[in-house]
Length: 119
Image 1 (cartoon, rainbow, N blue to C red):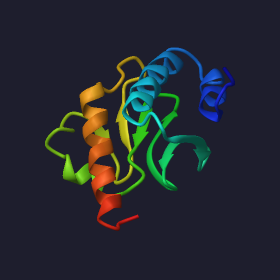
Image 2 (cartoon, helix red, strand yellow):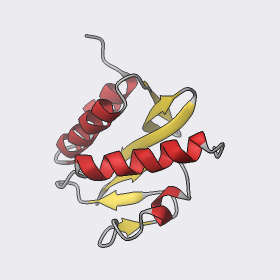
Image 3 (tube, rainbow, N blue to C red):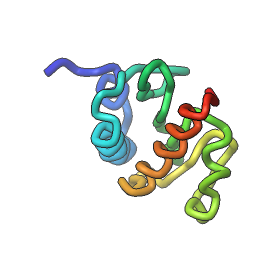
Image 4 (tube, helix red, strand yellow):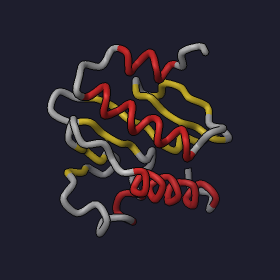
């Protein structure tokens, strides 16, 4: 099997970030099995029909999930209590991957936004 651009990105990430992001990436792949995997804004990104739906990244002190829209995280604010956030990034510990259920809700919110015509 050929490595995707996301696999190549993850290969360059130090531990424990790499293992955590690999788990998150696998969860996203299960939710979006027919997505295009690419690098957008230097971040691993999953796209469907040309729309970016999810992204991830590693930083020194945390990992991040990107819903690829500034309006998704506020919609799920109650569920995201306890996480550090900016308008467009959800930060999580380098050794604690996001749950599959939370990722599924984040992606569903982004898909609903795209279906409603919001980029």
